[in-house]
Length: 278
Ligand code: PEP
Image (cartoon, rainbow, N blue to C red; front, side):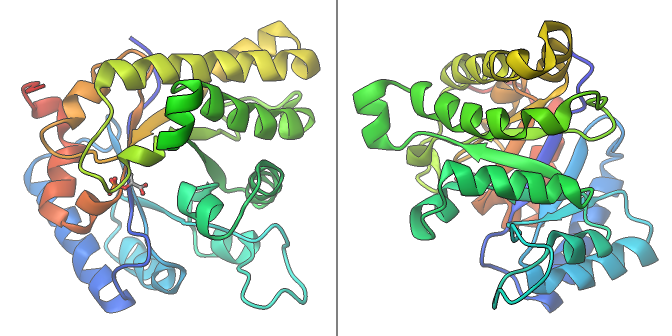
C-alpha cells in the first residue's frame, strides 16, 4: 500500500460558465458531504475554465469547502506582452493548487511540444502551483510503438528539462502529478483496461527515477518516483473507476465528461465504496 493520497480530478475543458460553476461545485460539495466523504483520504479537485476560477475561489473560501482546484493551462511567461496568455502568478493568486500542462488537446490543437510542456511545468512550479503533467499515446502511436513508448518519452523530456530545479527539494514540499491519458481513450467511451493502464503507469514511475537519476542521484530520484502521484485518464466512469484505483501504481483519475455531472463525479470520488464490476 502506498502512502500517496488518491486524487480524483475533474477537467471541465471548455464547458460550464462561472454561474454554472458555482452551482456545480456546490452540488458536488453537498453530495460528498452527504456521503461522508473523507477528503483527507481521497482528494477531490476541479479544473474549470479560467473565467470560472475567481467564482470557484470565492465559493470554496466562503463555505470552507475541502475541494481543491486548478487551471487547465498556463502561460510560460509570468507577465508581459503575450496577448491572451494567463500567468501562473495570476492563477496562484486565486488560491489554485494545480495547473494541467500538456493535455493532449493542447498538444493536438495548439501544437504544444514537449519543450513547451516542460517550460509550462517550470512556470507552474515557479509560481507555487503543482503541475499535472499529461502524457499519452494516440491510436497511431499505440499501433506503431505500443502503449508505453510515447508517454514515457513525453514524461522523460519534461523531467530531464526540470531535473535541476528538483535538486535538494523535498517531493512533499513541491510535488509533481502525472496523468497518463491514452488519447484514444479520451472522450471515446472506451477506457484502457486497469491492467493496461497499470503497466504503462508502472513504466512512467520507473521513468521518473531513470530521468532524474543523472542529475539528482539514485536516492533522490527514487524518492521522487515513489512520491509522484500518477493518475489514469480516458473515459473514467462510475462503473470502472474502482478497477483503476485497485492497481498498485494508479493514484487517481483525471475525469473529463463525467466530471460535468456532480452526482457522477461524486460517485467516482467515492470509489472506495464501489464493488469492482470489471
Ligand atoms: C480528459 O480529457 O482529460 C478526459 C479524461 O476526458 P474523458 O474522461 O471524457 O475521456
